[in-house]
Every structure is written in C-alpha cells, then in structure tokens.
Image (tube, rainbow, N blue to C red; front, side, top):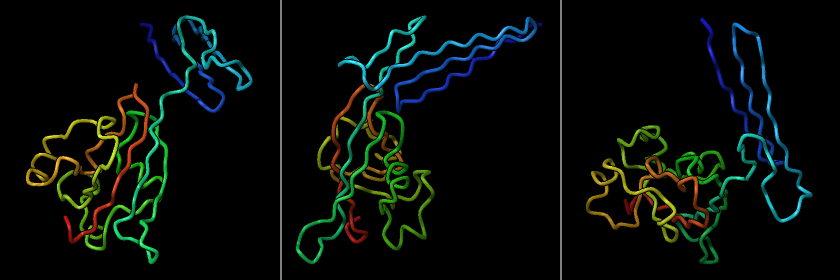
Length: 175
C-alpha cells in the first residue's frame, strides 16, 4: 500500500517557498521550489509552478502603551510586528518581552487558558484588525468597555488584513 505525505516549508526573508512531495512505494521524490529575489521590481510575487505563491504575508504593526506614565508624563511605548492572523496578542507580547501582567497577574495567571482575566488590555485603535470577542471574553468582560480584551483570547489579524493596532496595558487596580 502506498502512502503520500506533504511537507510545505515557507521562508519569507527572500520570499522563498519550497514544496516537498514524497511518495513511498515507488520511491519518487519531487521537489518544487520558487524564489523571488529582493531585487525584483515592484511585484512581490515570483512566477512559480502549479500556482504556488511567493507573496509575503500581510503584517500588523502593534504599539503597546505602558500602564503608568513616566516621570515626564508620557506613557512608555513598545512596538512589535506580527504576521496577520498568526498569533494571539499574549504570545506577541511575550515573544517581544513586553510586560503584560502586573504583580498579581505574574503569579496568578492561568497561562493563556482564558480562565483568570489577568491579561486584560484596552485596544485604543485597530479593533477591526482583531477577531471578535470570544465567549470567554464575554463572560469575563461583560461589564467592561467594548475596547477591553483578554490578550490570551485575541487573535491579531485574519491572514488577509494589515494595519496598526494600538494597545494600552491596563494597571491591575483598574481591572
């Protein structure tokens, strides 16, 4: 009996895509790859066989304002970028070492399971670039403003959109 397996690998630094197809039994291996160099014209797509696209995925820019103003009265700002629809807001913050939890939340958070409510953030701009509130969020945030979200439940982007999301980290006493 023959088995068929697929392994798709994506590398977007030079918009390079490789597709590997392996068929056991007959021992045939077929490798298809297409490249798009960074020196190409305004088109970000390469001509690839079998409809494989080498376009870079849309990105979401994020700005995170700190929960408290600094000594000069301005809020500290951290910036990050993420592939649209690829990660949760909590994961993006952790990957970029952006503080999410206050003292209580550092000790008592649920690890992203949506069962504690310690990762509440306020979306100041770009709410349309996020997923809709989940049932878990409706349960925890039913008496909170619509702009408040749980970072562990919020998917940034939808794989097709791009833009900017501005997030205010909320101090513990306000939650």
